[in-house]
Image (cartoon, rainbow over the protein chains, first blue to last red):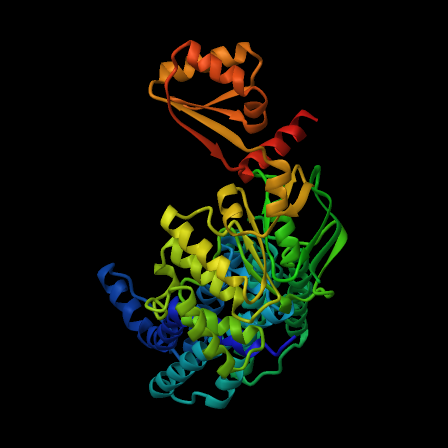
Length: 255
Length: 303
C-alpha cells in the first residue's frame, strides 16, 4: 500500500474546483460574511422605512456587534448547513452511482484512505470559506460597530468550523452508506433536524452538537462555554466515520 | 506456468447462485477467452478477480498471490472521472499504483500512442466517444504493467470499426501480459484468444486451447449453394427424406456435415443429378467457435 492520500487529495480538490463546488461554497461564505454585519447595521433603517409606509411607529433597541455576529452564526448554522449537506451528499454516493468508485476499488488503496481524503478535502474547503467569511465579516463589523472583540470572534469561528465539519462528515459518511446522493442528502437533513430539535430541549439538549451555535455567541461575549456539545460533535464525527467504513467495506458494486 | 488459478469459487446473491464452484487455470502469456451467454456468471467471476466483490467460497491467486498490484481491470461499462483529461487520469492511476513520476510519464507516452488517443490526451474524458473510452480503459488497465489484465466485454458496446481496433489492440497485449477477457461475441474470442473457457449457468462447461477445441469439438460443414432458392429448398427436402441432416443457411444455400457428405456422397450426387438441381458452388466451411458454443449450450439446456 502506498501513501495515496496526497494524490487522492489532489483528485478531490481538483474535482471541487472543476465542478465549481469550492467556488459555490466560497461565494456563499463571502455573501454571508458581507451580509451579516450590513443587514444588522441597516435593519433599524429598513424596519423604520417599512413602519413609516404602514403608519406604524417602531421602537428599536440600539444595534451592536452582537446582532452582526448573531446574524452571521444563524446564516451559517442554518442556510450554511443546508448548503454543506447539498455539497457533500454526492461525494461517495455519486461515485457509486456513476461507477467511478470502482476505478479506485480495483487499485491498491483502502476505503479508509478514500474516505479520509474526501473528509480532509471537505475540511479544507470549509476552512477556506469560513476564513474568507470571518475576515470579511470582521472587517465590516469592526468598521460599523464599536467595541467589536476581534480575537474572540476569531476563536468563535473555530467552533463554527467544528459545527460545519460535523455536518460535512455526517453527510459524507451517509453518502458512503447509501447508493444515491439524494438519499444521503435527505438522511443527513433528517438527522440534522433531529439534532436541532434535541438541541432545543433543556438538559439532554446540551448533548446535541447543534448547541455549538449558542456556544459561538458565548465565546464572542467572553462567557464560559459548556463542553457537552463538543463531546456530542466528536462522537457524531467518529460514529459517522466508523459507520461509513463498516458499510463501505462490505459494499459491492451492482453494475 | 499458471498465472491465474481459480479454485472452486462460488458466489451467492440471496437466492441466486451466480457461480457454482468455478475452477480455472490460465497459463502465463495467453489471451484467455471467457465465453458464455448473458447472465452465465462471466462478469461476476471477473469482478471477483478484480477484488470488486468477495466470493462466497473458494479462492484464487494471480501469480501465486492475491494482490491488486498485479491486476489491470477494464469494466464492461467503464466509468472514469469526466472532468479529468486522459493524461491526468493515467497520471492519477500511475501514482495510485506507486509508479514514479518519470515511469508514469514514460508509460503514458507509450500507451497514448499504442491506444491511439494521443491527439485527445489533453481533452476531458467526458467528451470521449465510446471507442475512445474503451481505448483509454485499456491504457489505464495496463499502465502499471500488471501480470494479468481483466477485460469484461471490451468490445461488445462498440461499432464494427471500434471493435476491430480494440481487438487489434488486445492482440498486441499478448507481448506484455496475460489477458483474461470475457465476451458473448464468439467471433471476437475466436479472433484473438489462444485458450477459451465456456461458462453456462455459473459452471464451467469446458476449457481448452482454441485450436484443439475447434479440431475436436467443431464439425466442418459442406455448403451447397444453388442458383435458385427453390432448388435449395427442394434439395433440402429430398436429402431429408434420405435421412441426411441438412440445414438451410441462406435462401439459396444448404449445409451438410462433412462426414455425412463423405459417407453419403453418391446418394447426394445422384439426387442432384436426378432432379437437375444446379449447384453454383460447393465449399468446405471451417469449424467455428459458434458451432462449439451452440453445441455445448444446447447440450447443457437439454440436460
